[in-house]
Figure 1: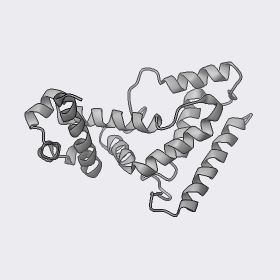
Figure 2 (figure 1 turned 135 degrees about the horizontal axis):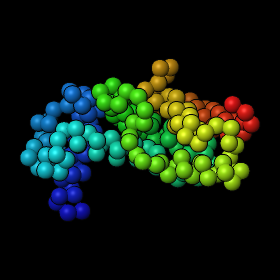
Figure 3 (figure 1 turned 180 degrees about the horizontal axis):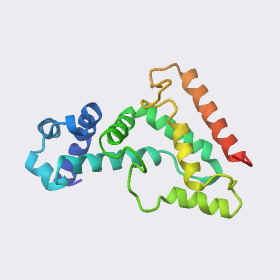
Figure 4 (figure 1 turned 135 degrees about the vertical axis):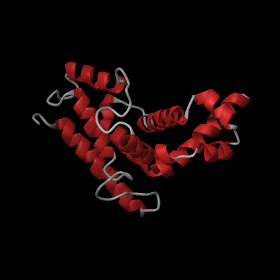
Length: 189
């Protein structure tokens, strides 16, 4: 990793901590640059603005979560459990997404990706008869993510953590896998 890449990495890491704690509006560039040991001028050169840094942090963290486990159509319950595990290990990501919802994108897709390859893969699997087509692929994927985030820091019911007893986290994993399997097995909405 060259010096510029190392500086960008430190900015992304420091930005993630600052934005998760304070949101976009409350985050301070002075704290981010000091924590990253990178000048504000350099931060602006890399990301153009505080908002640009937030966008880069959010995109990276979301990608880390949804790619935490290989996306395989023959085991979507395992994929959902992998997202659950990743969110328990990295609760900061859900906080970042919550700030983005509160301050930026209250409705619609959180990230403005043209076409999500996972949704396209589900669509193709439905065409091929591998996954029931009773639910639109986009809705199915969104529900899969929502189920995986049921115990995340954004939950209205309960937030899980790594400090919870192992049997509690295992019970949630088992319940999540079973719920996703049931959704996939459903023949009608």
